[in-house]
Length: 211
Image (tube, rainbow, N blue to C red):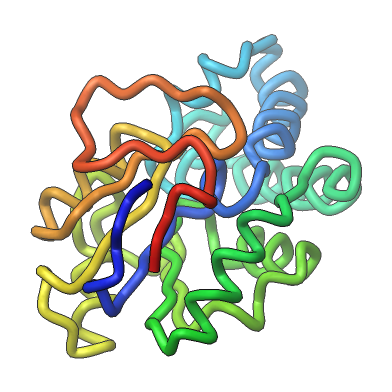
């Protein structure tokens, strides 16, 4: 068990942390790169391009570059059409968020997703009521592993770093928490993820978290 009773602000990554949305991201990018780049990419090859929002990934990699806007529209079309089939959350995640809400904790999301795909997913998965603040990947100057998004959350809630914790499923998440000076929790809530950097805590299920 991970005792986080003393913390006031709980910040979460989204894809792979609050929701199992990596499959829909992979499928959407795969079909975009197949059409425009004639590439057939595996999940890990797509994930290696993550960092910026979907807009940044497509602008960085789609060929020719003048097709980026068209490719982004295709990405969103696929994302929305396939969402019900390929995206989910779990009851234990919802229960944790509900407990945090009932306890009066600040709840925020700092995600690399763009605002459009984040809003679509958080609404479709009925998570919106639990989240007080969200910062998307196309709303920061420096994406994770930079700590900008987390620092902005701390400023918004007037929260000292020692009272905040960040949950994520990737090395970039753990590094972002470290750069922002807050505690990190690496999560394996959906898939078993390996970390090259050491989080302060590791959680296999939301039931690990004591608040």
